[in-house]
Length: 249
View 1 (spheres, rainbow, N blue to C red):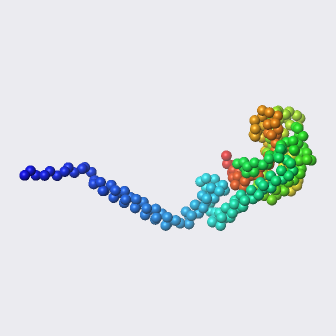
View 2 (view 1 turned 30 degrees about the vertical axis):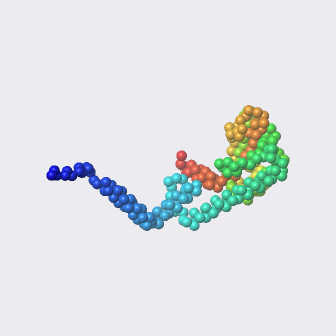
View 3 (view 1 turned 135 degrees about the vertical axis):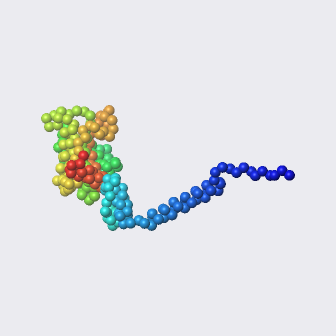
């Protein structure tokens, strides 16, 4: 009888060896991960807390902090209370605007900076002037009372339309918009707002809320904005200015 031939063996390792190798590698990775989690030291924990602090806007990316757990929790509590007060403050300002029949000239919006109260120039000034009208003072008194009870920094912005102005007092819209913002800020200081939480900026015609194509739109763009700047953004800006003051670029 003819001898039976053995089937040809396939080249390479047996198929079961590949599966076994994958399983072994996964087990090794799993135990390495367990080991790394079990060997956390105090330094690594502090670095992790520092990363959390940076995520809250306190530090720039890449910096580390020795902030402790209690301080982190305190900051989180502060941010939570700020968010809660924001809703109450928005409601209070909007109710006042409605009760004073100012809805057509004063509005409240949320922006990336925080809360912005937009007041059209007709409420505050005569055309081409930066002298506050007496009729503007009750509005600013109300806002100043809110500011004194809030944790926000305040940025006062002056804006104009695109019609040029050229007078001895205001050679351009830059001077007019800045002078108007300063007038509002100075009045707020006179009724008790702390100067160290205030800043003023004049944007002239370059930050319109609507296109300057009709008289109605131009009236909306001639405004003063009182921005309640979120504490996180205010602190981030302070860090930038502090670096510049210390010689950074």
